[in-house]
Length: 83
Length: 218
Ligand SMILES: Nc1nc2c(ncn2[C@@H]2O[C@H](COP(=O)(O)OP(=O)(O)OP(=O)(O)O)[C@@H](O)[C@H]2O)c(=O)[nH]1
Ligand SMILES: [Mg+2]
Figure 1 (cartoon, helix red, strand yellow):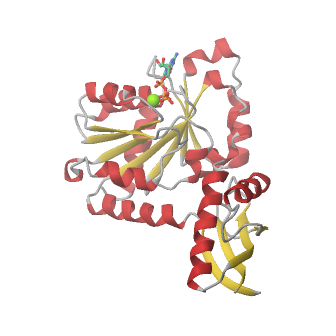
Figure 2: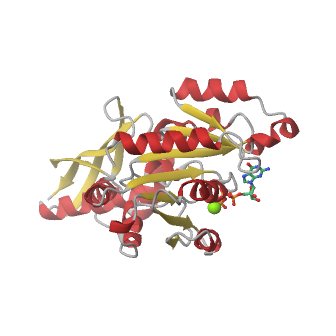
């Protein structure tokens, strides 16, 4: 539905975590997506690639795993970074 | 390369404030109903009829969410209950933060029942917890009987469905059985067939609402 806003939250949260860990680059973000979260993975990836340009997560891959847990949930499981 | 565990919900910002709202409502014994549905389904009209039916017994407040104008808030104001208009200026839904800000304009000690009319939209409002006590969707006959099938996300998060403009079912060739069956396929939900024009079915909705409210002990 509002993939751009969601992509921005993901970017902000991941950037915060990366900085707290003194990382200079985010290479991958692992997400867990519920079946009824109403998020389209393709448009999420597209929005993320636009928003992340030239920043700490430029070129980072969004790795989306569909999960059974919370059907409405979207969670950042972990991020992969370079120091 | 290093993997850092995060394990945090992307919606946690909204969820956190929704919980704060919920606590504020509890402390003030306010029962809060989030009314969602397509543009023009009849959310404001339903509110006006509900206010008319209840306002001698229950102290009501309303938060109106629209992209633009204070049109709906003016209608509610004319009905004699406190109302705050939120203009989202483009955003397709209300979020918990907007509600938190709107609450500063009410004296919650003087409100028993707060209605939140969400932005007319059958998709996005379903994704945002506001801290409310109950959620309903207003569907209407002119939208067609296939809406539960086409917009299942909304029907998954609500506690009841109001099928409004039932006075028009003949004109639109609306198949109520199809509608009911498709809602049931998504979830077992109470469906009220109502008309805000003829007042048909409204007492069933009002009884349900008051029943939900007493069930939480207010
Ligand atoms: N025939 C008929 N018309 C209705 C009924 N309920 C509402 N209407 C009309 O439907 C139109 C839209 O109603 P509103 O109450 O403004 O709808 P809304 O859902 O609040 O619309 P937005 O706030 O713009 O999303 C108005 O012209 C109402 O008079 C009904 O039960 N029957
Ligand atoms: Mg309205």
